[in-house]
Image 1 (tube, rainbow, N blue to C red):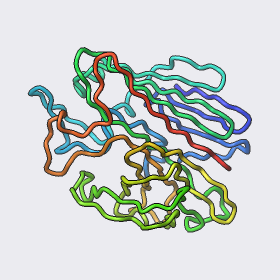
Image 2: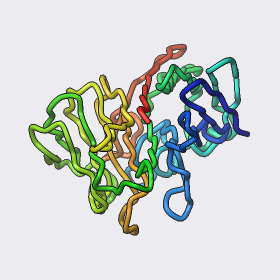
Image 3: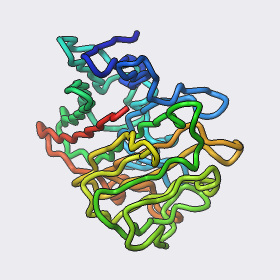
Image 4: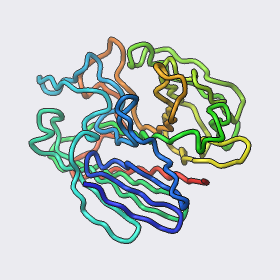
Amino acid sequence: MEYTIRNEALTLTVSTHGAEAVSLKNAAGEEMLWRGDKAVWGRHAPILFPWTGKLTGGAFTWEGRTYPGGQHGFARDLEHTLLRQEGQELVFELRSGPDTADRFPFDFALRSTYRLEGTTLRHVVEVENTGAAAMPFGFGYHPAFAIPFDDKHDTGDYEFRFDTKQSPLCVDCRPNGLVSGRCYYLATNTDTIPLHDRLFDNDSFCMTNLTASTLGIVEKDTGRSITCDIAGYPYVLIWSASAKLEKIPFVCIEPWHSLPGVEGGSQDWGDRAAAAVLEPGEVWSTLLSTQFER
């Protein structure tokens, strides 16, 4: 099912499937999220849990058992329960159970709270360890923003923009989507990354040394923008599905708390770098705030 909240500036619709935001419109009724065309990329803004990226060898092991798994975990593919719809807030929850036991050997509660505040969407995610053993896990956000903002602009009219000058150092995950052990600079001493249709032909850029507080996609001639608060995130990715397209129809800004598996590395879940390791009863939370100046 889908649930909608609105204020004077934004109208947000979230599906119980994955607790995923599937539509976000401005006051003029313009859609600002990617529409999720399955022929290109069939998602809008998935939640990545309990891991980000790919698993080494497509699986992990824990206490002698092997758990196969696809990219970005499984929370985005399961039904979440609506806990509350009140005013300008929606709260969803996914709890461990029969649908997760063969995928992840831990008990957990994953809660998503969406809140509209003026032109800002706040998305809080909480992870609770409801089991009896320590639980390592990964997490990331993956929102996709539709471009161009109107039919008068093209891809080259946009740029990624930091609030301070940066020299983004990227963790190389080419060509298999796993950490290769190499790093490279995407750019040096700049507050902008120009956008063009071939930028992502070799997949995403995973930036790891950012000191900026925000990263946005900006329409250069008008200043219209979508800006994410990235302060405190160890990794921020930018990506679009461009390899088979002449024009990219969306861009993703993805603040992550963990990385993909390591090429040729260990499959033991305890060896994988985690966003956090929760003791029984502990709760971890994170927030993505995104401002829409459209």
